[in-house]
Image (cartoon, one colour):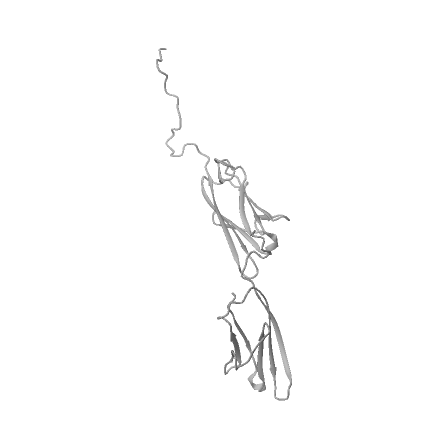
Length: 209
């Protein structure tokens, strides 16, 4: 989120004044700092779109004698999943034995498959792959190599004919995410309508035998 309210507390019993500095701008009760009767303070910057980056925030209390104390906190705003800016995040690239009309149409007559794709390791994100409603992570079958190639091996499971929705979702530490989807069609039967008929040779002209 890049439209933020910054919040904190101050001890009203200390009879001190508070100044909050956000990214070099000093806020007091004269220009945007609000302090309620319980000592909760806030600076509302929801009207300002803050670019991605790290924002140093400090809160300083000063008493009438000039004594002061400052606390600091960096706030990181990150609204982009593509951290390294290379245009790559996540992709679903292939299945083993893609036997459809092309080698990349995700139609197959093989029902023991490995699902494959890529993830950009430079984005420092986590990956979850969902196949037919089951979520796979590195804890339960998702494998990611050092080059960012990922795979889920379901060759030990015979998948019935049908259409399998596959999605791959990357999520970074700030909560940004991106999802790509692909339907995989498994079709192991030539008799599509199940009537027992497919093709036959029935006759020749002038069968004189």
